[in-house]
Amino acid sequence: MPSKKEIDSINTTLEELVLISGLSGYENNVRSYLIKKLKTKSLKSTTDILGNLICTLKGDDNLPSVILFAHMDQIGFIVKKIEDNGFIRVERLGGIPEKAIASQDIVIVNNKNELIKGIIGNKSHHATLQDEKYTVTPIKNIYIDAGFKNKRDVIKSGINIGSPVTYAPYYKTLSNNNVCGSSIDDRAGCAVILDVASSLTKIKKRPTVHVVFSVQEEFNLRGILPVINSLKPDIAIQVDLTLTSDTPDMNNSSDILLGRGPCFSLFSFHGRGTLNGVIPHPSIVEIFEKAAKTKKINLQRSVASGILTDASYVQFANNGIATIDIGFPMRYSHSSREVCNLDDLINLKNLILGAIGKIDNKLKLIR
Ligand SMILES: [Zn+2]
Image (cartoon, rainbow, N blue to C red; front, side, top):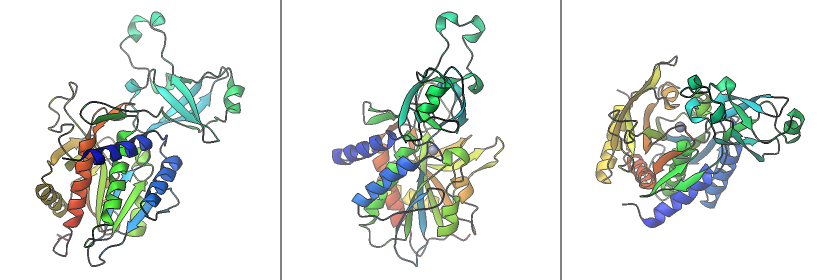
């Protein structure tokens, strides 16, 4: 059972991370926060041209090296057109569901890195036609109302074509250590690997681990690739959400439950134009299973289609990388109110530490 101190600590970090707006390709503020946090733990980090943040913890060079990564970016929109009357049209950036957009609080980041508050307009109920009542407004008809009088007013505020937009940063705690936020995907993953990084410094016998906070996952699932090419790790552990099936709308899709422990994916596949997914490396599956047993952590097993992470592309880099997707259970993905559980996050951290501890000379990567 995670202690209250551990729960309070990850709750604070997660809240701070979720309250930062960081659209794909615009991760600056999230990265600055993480650099500061790493510094407080006496951990040095570097960044690359794309903006990936890398913290290398040197270990035994005779053991296969590991990259442990989670993405800093979040889904949102990008300003596409400013109407003469001051309303703002947007393009989607990432898989933002149109049915979750109406009436949302949003923020636009202006050219001074300030957050300009706005809302997504939703046609007045009293003027809604019969056939509009049960339909979702397509993105081309969606607009932001940020209170501006006209186009000049918008431009004067530092907003222009190309300005990033996200759900308004939001975080709250629910019962039973469940928390709700606007970017649990994947700031929860960032919070977990941040904790792993500081714990790893206390473990003497272990491989070199590159803890990486990556960019542009929600955009094209490939932001991590330059890091993989330059660091050439042997093993890749990717940390992101796993969908739960414990809400009334998700019945029977899997056995994954919120608050019942971390998850690992045995199969993921995305068919719509991508034809990719991950079948994890059996030796890495084995060390995670063993770590769960040793640490008495309930490890949930996931098989899902329609899901893709950048791990899918990582596995084929260089000479091939032994890859696995590890996750925390999460509800309501890509909505402005995603829900996860803090006990799951602590157990996930301990599971990862346990699995890394099991990497030794006997680990067979070449099949
Ligand atoms: Zn994600």
